Amino acid sequence: MHFLRTQLLQELVSVQHQQASYTNCLINTKEGGDEITVDGTIKLCEDLNVDPEDVVLLSVAYELKSPRVGEWNKKGWVDGWRRLGCDTIDSMQTSLPNLRSKLGNDPKYFQKVYNHTFDFARSEGQRSLATETALAFWDLLIPHGLEGGALAHIRSRDGDDDVDMSEEGWKKEYTQWWFDFLTEKGGKGVSKDTWAMFLEFVRTIDSKFEKYEIEAAWPSTIDDFVQWAKIRISSEAA
Image 1 (cartoon, rainbow, N blue to C red):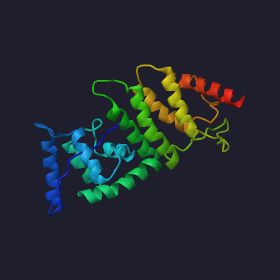
Image 2: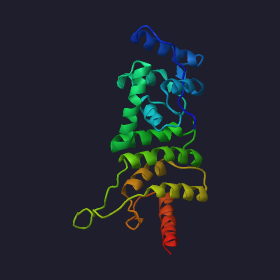
Image 3: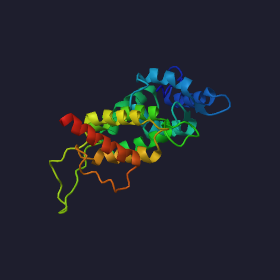
Image 4: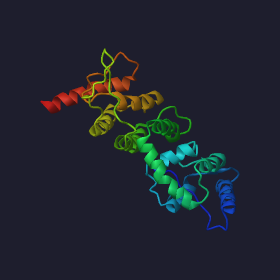
């Protein structure tokens, strides 16, 4: 999953000069166009001192409106960094911890980045994500959201509208269960509906999958996973 990398120019006399040089770099990166592509973005990761597989780059992709992995257009690039208040390499570096933290602890922001990631990761012309690709991006996003609280469990309410405070939610190991299930199941890929609904599923499902409503409008893949998970829980308890 090598995404995000681009050539930056050497130290410049002023911020305005540097920003203009970025624009020129973008225009010249792809002959006849105004995009940075995969080859160019390798250098950006090096200059920002960030691992190409760091989850924060999904936030950057969202903020800069990257259309897909390793591609950036001039308008998204310039407007995105401007919105973040970044006009130097140093300020870009400084923004990364803040974006990483926000992605981990802000549920609404996490959902925006999560939703953008589907289109960002999808191959051009394809309606679904290859399963292997979906697993790779879930492996970045889900643990980060669980650890930071963005995916904190939303407890169910009973008939009197009281919250069950004893209810536990999605366990860390269930993410690997989901991966195991999809790998065993096979199939052509992950639909946009399954990708979107899985986020709500992780936030609301109880730890024993007992309160799952199969009559609700969940994707059939999630229906099948719940049955699979219940069987696994029973077998491990035996």
